[in-house]
Amino acid sequence: MIGALELGLIYAVMAVGVYLTFRVLDFPDLTVDGSFTTGAATAGVLITNGVNPFLSSLAGFATGFVAGCITGLLHTKGRIDGLLAGILTMIGLWSINLRIMGSANVPLLTQDSVFTPLDAVMGTWAGVGLLAVGAVVLCLLIVWFLSTDLGLSLRATGDNQQMITSFGVSTDFTKILTLALSNGLVGLCGALIAQYQGFADISMGIGLILVGLASVILGQAVLPQSRLWMAVVAVALGSVIYRLIIFAALQVGLNPNDMKLITALLVIVALLVPRMTRVRGKRKA
Image (tube, rainbow, N blue to C red; front, side):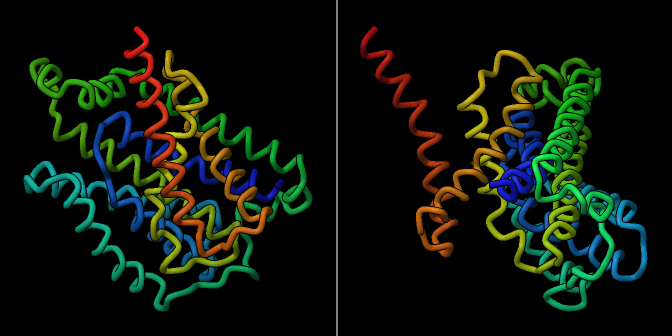
């Protein structure tokens, strides 16, 4: 269970990134499946070449940021549908990731990582507590940013694009920035996961958008969305809940090969139950 909690807290970085596009911008971004691996590949190659793990993780954020910019430019300047723009970037990143790594897998087990200073506490409740503090700090930073004038512009773009345009805000810029920040966080998460698991693999990002959506939806089903900070914290909490559900599924003997199916079913249930509840409430009224 401790391992599941640690993974959930690390994946919370990715979940917050998905929240920025899926909820804040109202943009279905599939770049995530590629940018996650890009961040992992970048960090993995730099670490094996002797670069400081913390700088390597920041480089993972930077490459994810660039990937998000590409999707944003394709959508805003190229006038390509958002869903298709994300798919095109994701497909292109597959080849780029192979170029970065030079092979399908980069082992990191013998390398120092950002978790090396925490070796004494990783795998214990103290390690979970430290990762939880990191997740809280990230949530606070996102809440602060979304409360600034620029952050309000990003939120307004997702809520009412015509209105924010009338105030002289460039929605092309806000879309590109949101996509870039989102995929930057996803790339950072990929870099952290590669170091946590001890390898970067070309296929580690496949289906990750579904995991991110599951985290967002599960978290928002647990906590109310009356305030911004509650919405962001709910996403991080949803990542932990998702990992605990996967842990429980494995504990009861379900086949690990069925995890993608279980994730899909979780998302379907999380989407349908609130709608069914609202329909019943209307009928009773």
